[in-house]
Length: 520
Image 1: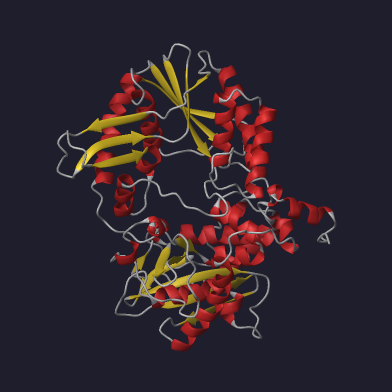
Image 2 (image 1 turned 60 degrees about the horizontal axis):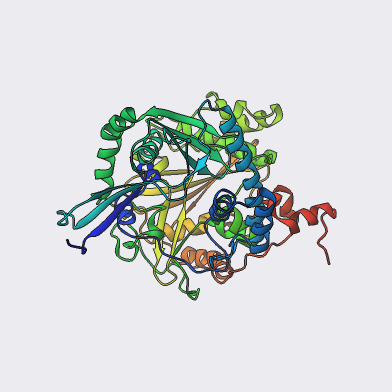
């Protein structure tokens, strides 16, 4: 029996991916790399280890919490510890999980109280290896697993970071398929349950008999698995940093974007201006919110942010499909209607000002939501820089990257524009590298500035050597400290009041409790 073939492993969540087909095919063929760093980058790792200790280690909840805090989420396994903020978040998530699990089991006529330690896995072996060079195909699903006393019913719990979030039908079907056929004799029925770590309530989304799971898998999952395994199309975007083809991918523009910034050893990463600004304000917030994706959904955003989001969402809807030029009297839509009355008025006034700057209908092509994240790879730094313009459109053969900024005040003329809006600086560098694709008409960066009492449009040329040099200076100043940071220490200050991870940051809470004064 040959042992030289590849193993292809596709997870349930992979079936719902809309990212780069080639990167997804690579992911199916390679095993996860162990990244050694100061803090773990696996957000749900400490929570899952805590639940393991509870379910398989015989520890009560209080003892588990003590171990989680004492070991900083490692549970003496040798894994990197969790950042203090992630430890606090994981403790809260553990309480929510235990409450959600108990409430769900109590509500079921036939509960599934028995945890299953080892992952379910559907495996198909080829001997000899097939035409793809594959020896074994596997379907897996990451989450928590449970069964009834007689194994007639199984449950697969899909884990999330906030409230239980709806998953694509193909993902829940793939999860049900693995739960049904990945653990020996198939049960009579299978359930798929959604859990979000910020909620003590779990949501059942599927309960099917095995025969229905088999039919759905044949109709829905099998064709998608073939698409994943045989994926060859390249689409530069959010998958680039993890893809082995990054350094020589024809779809990913590459250039030395920041020649004056020295490289720092470490895993390849994706960075946006939002990442850079968060790190500049507070490294801990960058790590918790941008890297680990933690967020306090109960925190109410300030009025200016709410107005900006409503205006952006309204323009995005108006500019989708085959739009005509926006007019001052166009309906504002649901996003604006959801604002408080005074904020609604301001948003409507800003949208009316936009009519003077709307680029439609003289637009040849508009990039949709999925394709608006534009990236370029700095080979020297091994960083994929990316940004999502509010509007990305083609006119006269060239791509236009438009940022829309809403505010009450005019732009300052005593401070360089790229320093006021560093998104423009990164846009210049990315477009100068040839993204999203080189075109004979050249490219342009625009800033649409909307106020309730006026508007302005700034245009910038990525082909200007002076502008590129200025952009390199602005972005470089933000990148240098981030690349060298491994501790992500908190920096209490004015930003704590609106911070979406303050809930799990002791220094931030202490700062505000002390009346906005840092402790000596």
